[in-house]
Amino acid sequence: MTALPINANRTALLGARSGVVCMRGLLAVATAVIAMMAATASSSAADPKAVIELFTSQGCSSCPPADKTLGELAKDSSLIALSLPIDYWDYLGWKDTLADSRFSARQKAYSAMRGDREVYTPQAVINGMVHVIGSDRAGIEAAVARTRADQSVMRVPVTLAKEGNHLNVSVAASSNHDHGEVWVCAISKSVPITIGRGENRGQQIVYHNVVRNMLKVADWDGKAGNWTVPLENISREGIDAAAVYVQDGSRDKPGPMLGAAYTSLN
Image 1 (cartoon, helix red, strand yellow):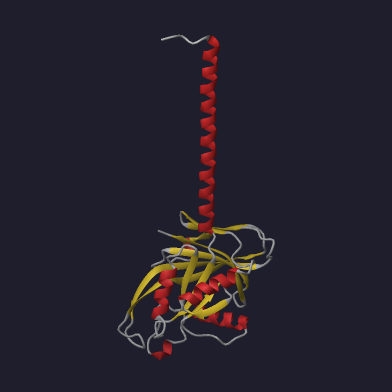
Image 2: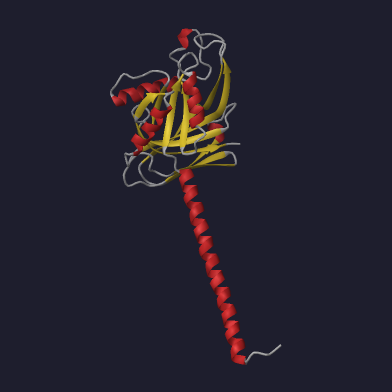
């Protein structure tokens, strides 16, 4: 083997080192790009574009198609789709086993805020603003797009995470809002019910993302906030998920949804 001159050796060594540095630089850039992509994906998943509330009833013959539609929408991670069974149809011959009078009051409060008398089942309220027939998937999707055109709707970043025996809730600051309420919902992802009487007698219907309990966490003043919610405060049999939302207005006068998050508990 012919030996290279000393200067040639130095040149080769510098070239090799330069190649190593260059490779390290490329790796650093690649790592940064991957991290940015991961952060973007994580941010997209953490910031849903709509909260869909379905007011439904086991005693309503028009509701099963809407319950099925909500189950399909619940698979979309960009949506938080919730079932809120009401109790005002219980007199029809079947007492809804999941109904809560608070949901009936919430539906009526929405109607009062809109200034109409549209209280019916199945009714879907999108982002606290627009209502459509709950089985009309195209209508729901159009309402999501329409409400998202309002730059104040669902623009506040919210996170929700289970840690041990409690939930951590975090709400970012907003320059566009200075008031609202933070609520946590305890959820059962899937509840099959066999209905014995009434308009749906003999049917087994699966209800999806059923809200089983609601807890006000705090009044929000537009500033960043963090809260800890003990799971024992919202838990009951069958709870396996939770959602948190920040909503303009109040419980009695609900306004647009400002932000929300969802997490599984198992």
